[in-house]
Amino acid sequence: MRVFDLCFTSINLSELWPLIHRHCLCYLPYLMDLVLNCIINPGKVFDLEVPLVDVAEGYRAMDERRAIKTLLRV
Image (cartoon, rainbow, N blue to C red; front, side, top):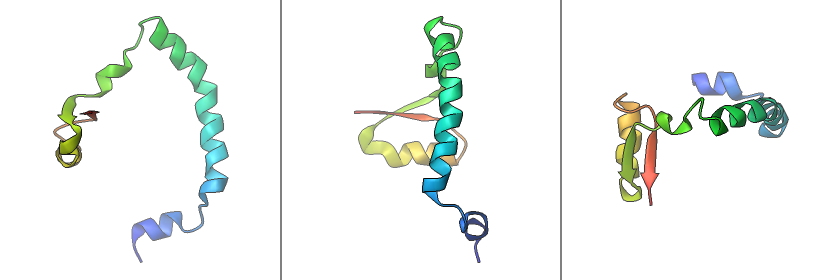
């Protein structure tokens, strides 16, 4: 049995979604205020840009820890 199977066999997405949704909603106004007042810049998360056709390279870079988050250009 794989580790994934052990961890997620009893989790149903329909049960998990309300918890995630409620958690995100409580922080959203605070985070939006930080972004709109230029206290944080959410764009700093993306440290690699690749064209959409090179999506595999973007995932490879994140897997190899050469990038934190890849921005795909259309």
